[in-house]
Amino acid sequence: MAEAGRGDGTKRLVRPRHAVVLLTLLALVGANLRTVMLGVPPVLPLLQRDLDLSHTATGFVISLPVLVMGGMAWASGRLADRFGGRVTVAAGLLLLAAGAALRGIWAAVVPLYLFTGILSLGVAIAQAALPVLVRQWFPRQIGLASALYTDGLIVGEAVAAGVTLPLMRVWLGPDAWRASFVAWSVPVVLMLLLWTVLSPPTSPTRRRRGRATSTPGATVPPVAAEPRQRVSALQLGLLSGSGSLIYFAMNTWIPPYDTALGRGDATALALGTLNAVQLPVSLALTLVAQRLLGRRVPFVLAGCICLVGVIGWVSTPVEWQVLWAALLGGAAVSVLVLGSALPPLLADRNEVAGLVGATLSIGYGLAFVGPLAGGWLWDLLGRPAAAFVPVGLGTLGLIVFGATLPRPPRPLVDPQEGPMGFPLVDLDGR
Image (tube, rainbow, N blue to C red; front, side):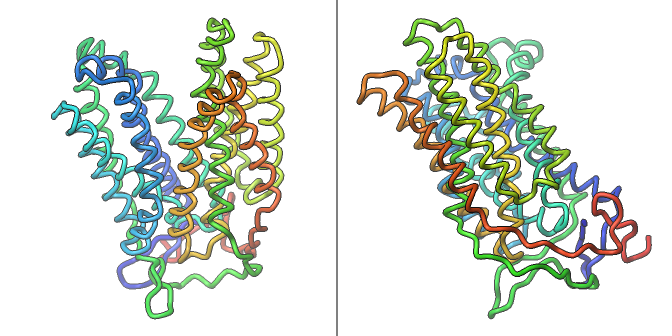
């Protein structure tokens, strides 16, 4: 059910067509949070050449956003608590647009890192606030809303990776990586304008004097639900981080592993499969996300599939790599899609922002440390397969933490709800 606050302190329900607008906004924001970041790898060789960067300095351009998003996620969640989700997302989009444009306009080494940090902070701020809005706008469609937002993230990654070089060569110039940075800031500015005009106002959820504030007022009757079990940010962070670790570690170590074994010609197909499978799997899960919401089995199953995939990867001939890559990529993205719904589902309304921030911090930390640990083990043991040991640990994390998830409360059905849980008419009667 979608809800929107009004300035007079009451709450009105949103009709299906208005709910579609809000769902579209969530998906579009998600896409813009990734296009700016994933537009960098295609032009990285040009950037490295023009700024005379070492390989270490070049790698830091890619890893800096992960560090900033992980380090600032908890604080970003508190901002959403304090100022409300709508304002926080707008602030994040503003920082993202400014950082993206300025690092293209002012192209030098120090400004590159500075403005990459600023745009990464914008991503962290907006990303922590969006689940808060999912809970406020769609309290009974958390699975669907979260899945659509995640679809936006994945589409943004795919579009940026596939379109940046053709866009640059056809419209901007063969070496115009600076202009490509500015170009990717333009959709963010447009998204900020759409967000400002179309998203309904929200109120802070921070506790004040022992009482929680939330989306204004309440002419809607309270929804009866089962008592909530206590949910641990550590558990959710380790669960979602295990999926991210698997994905990032496989992306990192597939090329060096194949090269070390003298089968580098298999890398492109395996790596492409690992990433290409994300979008169809994510879109398919969107159709059933509401049914799978908060269930333990999908996470345990994803862990088992990844375990089979990584064992197969290091123990079978190269011809099997495509199969294992498909299993690993599909299972990892399923954790992303279904895991993004857990904080707004399991936390009380006034605790969503803090739980999201802590979960993202832990998850990004694992995503950053996992590939590094794989490289360290490879160096230590002298065996290429050792790089995938963290992936194996990640699969066990999915199984253990998925099997022990708290069971979500089950709200009673609202008789005013129509198909898919959306109300047939708002309370204003319009």
